[in-house]
Every structure is written in C-alpha cells, then in structure tokens.
Length: 357
Ligand code: HEM
Image (cartoon, rainbow, N blue to C red; front, side):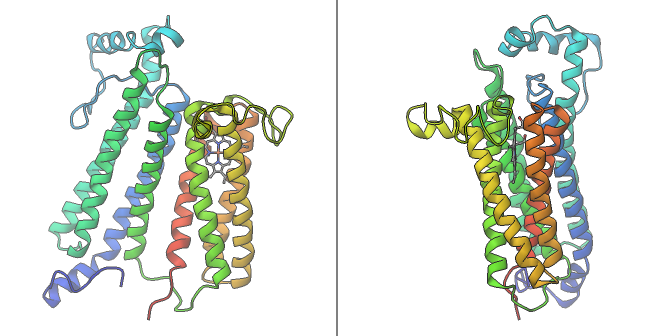
C-alpha cells in the first residue's frame, strides 16, 4: 500500500470510511494539479509579455481585488514609473499601456491564491467529512508548505527585477521559481496516483525500459532547468538558427566567461547551446524508451509512448520557438508542454515502480 495504514491506529469503521474517500481525494488533487498547469502557462505568458514587474507590492493574503478607482490605478502606475524597467525600457508608457501589462501579473497572482484556497479548503472539507486518510495529512501539510514557499519565491524573484539597473528578474530566481512549480506539480500528481486503484500488473517492467524512462526523465528535468536559464537570460532571442549557432555547431565564445562555470548560467551562447544539447540527449533517451515500451506492451506501452511523444513535440516546439524569435504564444506553449512532460514522466515512473506482492 502507498500509505502506512497502521498509523495512526483507527477503528475499522473510520479506516473504511477514509479508504472509501480515496477517489474523491484523488479527484481533488487532480483538480489542483490541473490548476498548476494553468498557473505555469499564465506564468509563461506573464514573463513573455513583460508583465511580471507591474505590481510592486506583495500582499499574499489580501490583494484579491484589482484597483477599483482611478486614484488606485494612478498610485500603482506611479510606483511602476520608479523602477528601471519603466525608465530604461518602457519610458513614455501611459496608464492604458500599464493596465495592459498589469492584468496578466494580477491574474497570475490571483490564480496562485485560488490554488491555495482550493487546496486548503478541499483538504479541510475532506478531513471534516472523514474522507481523508490521516496518514496523508503530513504529506498534504508539506505540499501546502511548498505552495506557500512558491508564493514567497515568486515575490523574491519579482523583487530582483527592482534592483538598480535591472530591467528583468534574476535568471537564477526565475529558474528556482519554475523548478519549484514543476516539483510541486509532480508531488501533487504522484500523491493523487497513489490514491487511485493500482495500475500495476504484478509483473516487473523490463529493466531496459525502466532504465531508459528514468534516464529520459532525469535528462528532461536537467533540460528544463537549463531552459529556465534560456528564458531568464533571454538567450532565445539570439542565435535564431538550428542546428548551427552562428554557423558553427558549438558557438564561438562558449567559454568566454571566467570563472568557467559562469558560462553555464550567464553566457548566452553557452546557455542556449547546453539547452539544445541536453534536449537532444533527452530526445534520444525518450526514443529509446519508446522502442522498449513498444516491445514490452501493456501496461507500460501507452504512458511511455505519451511521454516520448511529448518529448518529440517539445523538441520541435523548442526549435519553432527559437526560429521565430520567441513569440508569446509559442514560448508560452513551450513552457506549458514542459509541465505536461513532467506529468507524463510522473505517470510513467509511478507505473514502473517495482511490483509489490
Ligand atoms: C526535451 C526537450 C525540451 C525541453 C524539456 C525544454 C524545456 C524548456 C523549458 C522548461 C524552458 C523554460 C521555460 C520556457 O519554456 O520558456 C525552455 C525554454 C526555451 N527552450 Fe526549450 N526545451 C526543450 C527543447 C528545446 C529545443 C530543441 C530548443 C531549440 C533548439 C528549445 C528552445 C528554447 C528556447 C528558445 C527557450 C526560451 C523561451 C523563452 O524565452 O520563453 N528548447 N525550454
């Protein structure tokens, strides 16, 4: 069983009622996971439309309503006009222009608050109805804590965009924010899968299949972290050719920065090259996994083929995003498919766990 059913000790009726609630709890967690996918898409659109720095206050518990009076709009706009992004990039923007960039950031924050309410409210309602296994409470508390941390990290990221002479947020903080979103999504989905009737057949998946899926998943995760730096440094707005970069396979200037390790995070040529290289390795591993899954058949074939198919789609989407110099729609889609890819990998890893008696 996925949970320790012996702790805390429960009478038979209570234990049975909690077990009977598993499907409802799983459905609620799947709704939360779906809301996180929307949140990631909103986050991508917010970043790519340059909206992320338009709200200079952090009010995680209040701040549900947008500005309701002209005076409040003017107050927020006046705050925005003090930051380097306005002074160096958007100087001359009027209130109407400010309102345009405001709404996506507002919606992103509002959706985050809603996820918190659906999560906490759902947990409370299910617990009060006696439907939530007590053994699950610590895990849910941890997930809630991670969600709160994500809100804090979001603000920590946004605050880095207000530093003198900075017109965008820190790529390190952006990547942490994106990475934590993926982690929370994976943990929520995994927990939901734990509660659904087991899809495991009792047979052990062939070792090459397990190995290739895990390698492809690990490579996809590293590719995504590298992608965070491509997004954060805006490296996708340069070297807009594929497969060559400035006419070479490995771009000139790959190792220009010192200390050398900085190239991986701050040198646009290296940041983009690494993302391409890791993506190509992920693609190769995912194709191998697809071949092994095809041979292995059910119950592993379908989820692994979906995962591999998403890797192929994400690879092609990445190339299109690059060649078209990161249009908002394609960039947002690339970010959204990344979170779907995490989901597909979680389903595969869950299904491929060693069989239990
Ligand atoms: C397994 C394949 C891939 C995965 C998992 C992946 C994942 C990611 C992630 C998570 C990001 C950061 C967020 C965002 O999407 O903007 C990103 C950014 C990016 N990726 Fe990929 N990627 C893959 C393949 C590629 C390929 C093959 C290319 C191009 C050759 C590419 C080009 C880009 C570009 C240009 C960005 C920055 C987009 C922006 O500024 O919004 N990606 N990628």
